[in-house]
Each structure stands twice: as C-alpha cells, then as structure tokens.
Length: 288
Image (cartoon, rainbow, N blue to C red):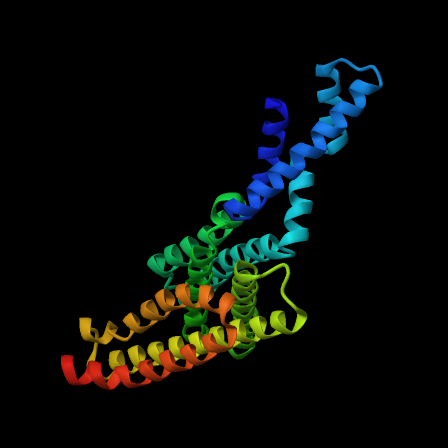
C-alpha cells in the first residue's frame, strides 16, 4: 500500500485540486490500484510482483496526473505557463528594444517584469500547491495583467511598427490573463450537480465581476497617472492604488458568493464599483 500511496501522491502533484477533491481522487485511485493488484494475485502472481505490475499498468505519474489535470481543469496549467513565459519574453524584448533604440535600459523595470513572469511560471510548475489556492493565483495573474498593461505607456515611445506589434502582444497577453482568472474563479466555485442554466449564470457573474475589477483598476491607474503629471510624485498620488487592493480583497469574498448566489454577486459587484466611484472625491477631500 505504501508503494501505491507514493505513486498516487506523485500523480496528485500534477494537479491543482483542493484538499477535499484530492482526498476523493486519492481514494478512487488507490481503489483502482488495489483492484488491479488483487487481479494479478488471483492469476498467481506474488504480492510484490502484483503491486509492481499494477503500478506499471496504471501509467507514469506525470502522464496520469497531467491527464487528470486537463480533464478536471482543462488548459489552466498551459495558460499559466503561456502567461508566465510570454511575460518573461516581453520583458526581454522591451529591454533590448529600449537598450538599442534609446540606449536607456531600465534595470528596475526589467527586474519587476521578470519577477511577475517568474511568479506565474512557478505557479504553473507548482500547480499541486499553488493551484489549490485559487484566489492567490488569481491575485498573481491579475497583478501581472496590470503590470503588462502598464507597459503600454512604454511602447508608445517606440517607432510606429514596433508600437503596433508590442501593443497587439500586450493586449493578447492581458486578455489571456483575464481569461485565466475567469476560468480559475469558475472552477473554484463550480458545482458538479448544478443545472446548465445555473452554470451559465455563474459564468456570467464571474465575467461581469472581472469586468468591474478591470474598470476599477483602469480608473485607479488613470487617477494615479493624472496626479503624477499634475502634482509630481508624492505619497498622496499613490492613494488610488488602495482601491485596487480593496477590490482584490473584496473579490476573494465575491468568489465564494458567486458560487452560492451568482445573481446577488452581480449586484454586490456593482455596489462596490459605485462605492469606488465616490472614493476618489473622498480621498481628495481628506488628504489634499
């Protein structure tokens, strides 16, 4: 049984299932392996030989684990790898372009870009640990999307053809980030026995709440940019970023609410966005 458990744990290391689901899968896989072992024993094999043959027939852990991961959470790991590698490549391309075109490489910017790309890639590599923390992965990918979107400001300094190519690249990359977040949030709240209509409403609720988040983040970043332009860099100019942090925390609870009351979650998302729309004026009144 220890060999079976070791084999099953290696399979589970390729999956992002939460603890409850992992226990169910583990029990089911162990049952299959034990049944295969007993079948070999019935046909005259010794116990140790039967264990070895059962494991061989079951398949390599990486192959079986990847197959189960793709069945339960299709394309999620691949999307993470794609976003991570694409973010790293964007950093390299932009850094080289700035160095050769303007002779002004930005090491701090490059370091930040590589950190975001590495975090997403590491999340894909450690999917069995990171993947089960759906909200945490969403935060990493969302912040990566914001940072990659910020790079649009940089590419506007390039030549026209370069601007078109880099902007297209960044738009696709940010879109992939948002698609991943939507899918990841849906998988976190999915009910296997839910009716098709309920699943559709849940998907719509997730999409709308992510759109609300994007609107909030764009508005906050535009406000930061405007304050930096007109007042220069001060700690007050960074206050709107607190709105983004507030939404990320709020969305953690929204993910749970969407799974239970998807329609109500749409209205709470709208309510939060309305509160955020008032907050800039409150910030200006209190701190300016």
